[in-house]
Length: 622
Image 1 (tube, rainbow, N blue to C red):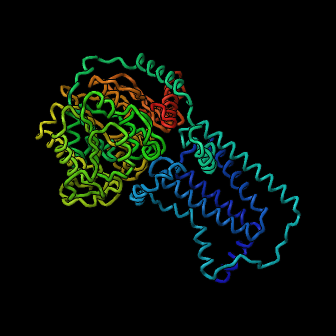
Image 2 (image 1 turned 30 degrees about the vertical axis):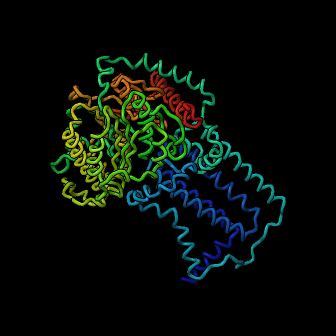
Image 3 (image 1 turned 135 degrees about the vertical axis):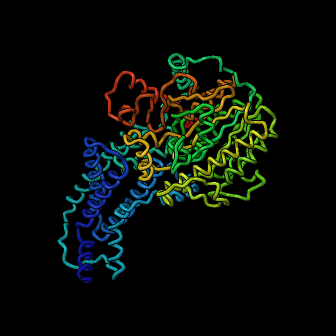
């Protein structure tokens, strides 16, 4: 049996049809990728598969210009590379709802952030990306199957036919790549559309080609043209949406401002219980007593740095972390500049090393008077998930705030509820006081426990602020930076469906991008803002409250009437509708036809994204 298996493998490997077999296997793997990663509707699915087959068969068809031995070796190499690529894209999509880009090569130093999430990302069916390679490897190991002639193979010596076939395959491949690049250019922000229209391979070809000249992706090459359209857009927003009571305008002038970014906290944990106990009692109390922002959405993919960028600049981020790693020298009308120019003491605090996401360089380039990173804190005796524990961060943050000249603005970034959610390093596990029951030792269970610890630490933070006399008269805004769980985490869906048995797919998609958020404005209690808001809106809102000039901002005042927000991957959320390639009614989850109103939202979204990308790529605010 062993010899028979070796003989069969030997024949396959030495067969003239070996590249065709490999091509078919790769098409099947790509179908697996589409099925398990990107949601493709029936009418588009056939087109995507046909374009994928043309790309792969054309590529392997070109290899027939090479002698059989070399051709088969190249087939194996292509199979290995494409299998790894599909697997990596699948992993990364599950992590960030996005596929890999060559632009992210500069972020390889932050790979630990993704590696810590691997237990969540690995799925049993992903072995199918490598099953044929495993069998091939077993065959080689069993007796080093060599690529050699085992039987007389009829050679095709008709050189003109080979050349003609090669030219045909090359032409098909070239046209496929040109078509793919055109599709990517037409949908510059929506990766799902790019993958469906251009195929996953066409996307990567276009991505590599475009990486040599990223600026060509910008709509605006001229600052004056950009500013003209920006001013027109802001004027439309002011006329249509910003009718609000002026009693709050400038009402917080001269008061201290604290911005708190909470790691990975999604909105679904707010005011929820598990086995009789609140998951986030301290955050619930803060949100319920002050202003609940029940529909705040992340506008990035899934990095903490992107969330910071959106908050600080009121612009959309680029590729994951790219704004901080590549464009950190850019000039922005950032939140620190806004407060610094008004005489505030400005500070940024995070219990991580300064090199991570390039924060040292980023904030040195802004008007931040006090950059408080890990080495600026005296007590580092407790680290959770390799970052200064939230409790130690908060206690020392308040001590620093007490010594700042008032008024001050402090941007504090927590990290203990970071992905992985194991709370490694927490010295007293009694600070986690919920019983997650059947979810114990699952990724979801760990997430809930991390959220509960983050809430405990927040309670300490509030008490420290009160003890220091900094709580009652300060403006405080807090929010989760991004999602912590993948969109279709099984335990999370089980939890959500117990709360509401009528959960739709639109509900699940919105849950993925909706983060916990609340705001404290002295004098305002028990207020709820249910309309969609986002990180871009924080700077304009604080400018309005504190009587400051917001400068260049794509966000709007959260106390206004603007009823939609956009994400940087062409999603739109309004108070009634959700756009993800097609429009859906939020309440029912049903697809709805495009109307003039919906088309207006789409055009606003495109204009915002075009302006933001041009500003970053060309450093237009310099």
